[in-house]
Image 1 (cartoon, rainbow, N blue to C red):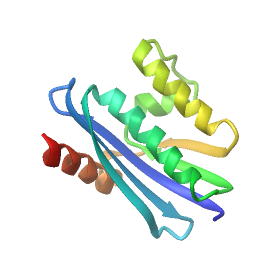
Image 2 (image 1 turned 60 degrees about the horizontal axis):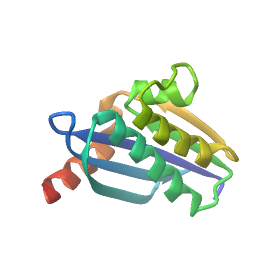
Image 3 (image 1 turned 45 degrees about the vertical axis):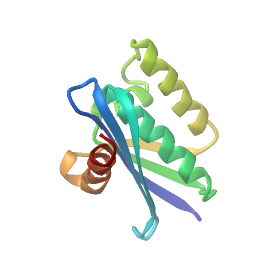
Length: 133
């Protein structure tokens, strides 16, 4: 597969609170390759956003793409992984390093999208929390 396009979302109710992640992988023709949702327990919104991105990169790797495009509705995470913002929170720094480790050998890009453009991943987050909390 030449290209995987990921849309990810993470969210916590009451921040921190019960949290979930949602991932949607598309191929270069914008066909869904895989979806994933998981309840991750107690977390902050930012921790959930990072965990969703880590999971997306792990899932994308299984398809051996030459390129990965990642779309997130968390501007903070996008700016941090693009090295525009520093990661000051120690818990987020661990997740940030996981993203960098997974991304280091790839042609990869990270983009911010509006929440309206990320509806399926958001739906998966809410389903994961609703099913487990």
